[in-house]
Image 1 (tube, rainbow, N blue to C red):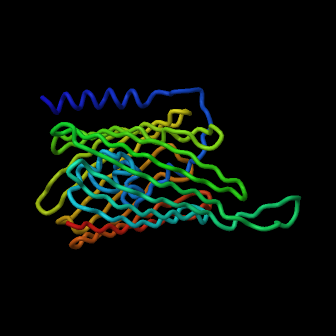
Image 2 (cartoon, helix red, strand yellow; image 1 turned 90 degrees about the horizontal axis):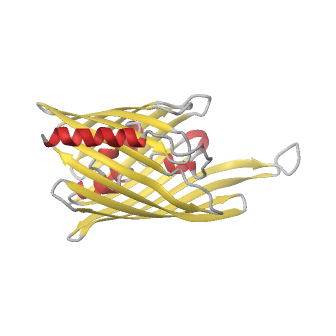
Image 3 (cartoon, rainbow, N blue to C red; image 1 turned 60 degrees about the horizontal axis):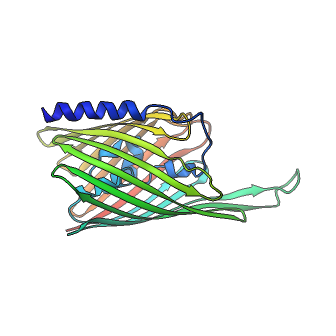
Length: 294
């Protein structure tokens, strides 16, 4: 009975988040939508209900499902020379789970011209954020998570900064996990709008002998425009050691499909993702290294 009630609530949330919220307003800092880790990239950002450090970036409440200290290092080669670096540390405490994250993006060698003709030189576009995350179980199967980000950006000689907040909820009815999060709410620069989003989704685990298959689905909606995206993904793992992943995300002209693999040995986990881009943007490669310290 509880499972059916939860499914009904989840369907209502999906319908609500799919609505348009405005007449369409441009937003800055679109790079905040780029997946930070290989698992997220390979699953088409469908892993909002993943009880892993990777899932914490999409829903801070997922942190309550992690029982040991985790250290995460990730490098992501995005399109046209853009590179992202992510470093995070997460640890459970008696008062809840705490994490700190540093994220940096750079796009080098952008030419500028003061007049038609040869370029006068080049510069590097940079964006960084520093995040503090806190999550706590408030009921047996229900968790809440909060995240605060300080964001900085530099374009040529112009520098801006701002902040954003995330809040997420995580509800478990084994083998189902339901997730709802509200991301990137805040201010930036001269009252510029961030890509504030609602994302809701679920995951389902299916066990067959030594193989576990996890199915993910999610729906995201940006509140300042009409962008609504569907996300689906699947992860197959053999004795929690070898992982294969596939994902699909709608709503992007530049890419839809994604793929990935992973290896988990002892306290070390290595993940890789690949996203093929259209329009000569190149391809995305991401490698994430995680250490679980019991």
